[in-house]
Amino acid sequence: MSNGIFSVPDPRNEPILAYAPGSPERRALRAQVEKMSKEVIEIAPLIGGRRVPTGHTAEAVMPHNHRHALAVWHKAGPKEVEQAIGAALEAHRTWSRMPWEHRAAVFLKAADLLAGPYRMVLNAATMLGQSKTAHQAEIDSACELIDFWRFNLAYAEEIYRQQPRSSPGCWNYVDYRPLEGFVFAVTPFNFTSIAGNLATAPAIMGNTVLWKPAPSAMYAAHFIMEVLETAGLPPGVVNMLPGMGADVGDPVLASPDLAGVHFTGSTATFQGIWETIGRNIRRYKAYPRIVGETGGKDFVFAHASAEVPALATALVRGAFEFQGQKCSAASRAFIPASLWPALEKALSEQIAEIRVGDVADFGNFMGAVIDRAAFAKIRGYIDFARSSPDAEILVGGACDDAKGYFIEPTLVLAKRPDLRLMREEIFGPVLTVYVYQDQEMDETLKICDQGSPYGLTGAVFARDRGAIATIAEALRHAAGNFYINDKPTGAVVGQQPFGGGRASGTNDKAGSALNLLRWVSPRTIKETFVPPTDFRYPFMQPGDG
Image (tube, rainbow, N blue to C red; front, side, top):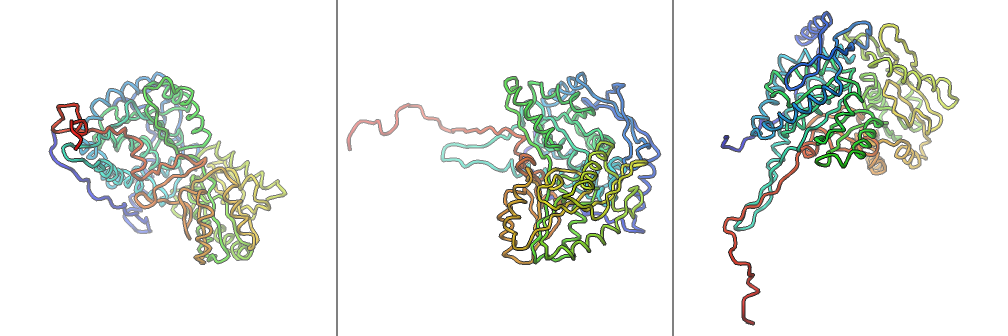
């Protein structure tokens, strides 16, 4: 047994490499992209440390070149789910009892592996499999996942150090137990780091996990597991189950041993999971913890005092980086009439300079949207805007899926604030602007607050401090992450814990101790050193003095 009170190394945000021309990281990443582009790998469910081919396969392809396969992956079904539950429960016996410093060492090593020999591997996998640029891949699959692993360990230590007071003669303490059973992690395609965090945050706290990655992000998921295995994660702690939603989800949610769900994805899917858990509530051994981050209809609200160049750049970056495929992407903007002529000109000029294409070309700002279904959905919104008398496409609008799923950055002017494009999550490179009269700011703030069911991210742009305070208060519940004079996307682990309320999720703040607390079941222990031996209290003694 270990005898010591251990402190993990003080976490620092991983420095972001620039990939500037002539830099060693640029050469290394180009070489890795080229190498992996020439290979087709096989991905199978990973259960109890063993790869389990099923024979039911699908291809992982490049979104920007959808005829180019990167991998063949095997689909898991009910049989594999049953095996994975057994493996997770078996691993729980030892992993949940392992001294926490040894659990921590696994993820400290994983972070160092990702910062070093695996950095270009996971970055290249994210570029090729999810069509992210070098910059977007670097801040996501490398830096943010490294930060999640390092900071989560510091937060775990912080939690374990939270202990109660003790009165004379006794000792009180809290045992932060892992949950009984297993945690089900369901992860999205758009952030490699989120996928890695959702699968490992419960594991850091001593839980075992069944992980279902998004089918369209299976390629990067494979390499996350490779990093964890190389770091020494014991078999069965994280079991990866590639597969389609119901094939994996239904048998998982039916298990009496389900202890929690860690989810990022669509609002509808999350609500469906919650409903299923509700129907099954009597069969579970304990009430499952349900943690979810879902959709968003993120806003930028500008005041008449806003600086146009900064506002324009924030809107372009916030709306069009990674093709707008972020739950935090700027999707609707409220602009005062006095600023609109100058802003429209600035936006049009910047958008005209955006290059869209293969992410292997480092001159491109945007790649392709993730798959055919996403392409069709986004194109549907653009077609609606094109045909609606209440909307006008100002810039962009072209869609081409001949080689890759490419959609131009698109700027739409809404003539009414309740237009579909102002209310519904599009999850693509479409920014819709509503121009309000300067004197109607208060009314427009109410529209911004109530015009969408979501409450994930938002931003205000203004120089006037009084206006900033007024807008921030009016939109207090409209966003879980709120930005002042900055784009409403790009939260940094350790700096801006991420999550929202309303239809955007449970707001359990990934990248903070708040999230990790959901994965423990505290046990309070009191020890009395010299217990009483007589049931009588002093007030019961004879005498009236």
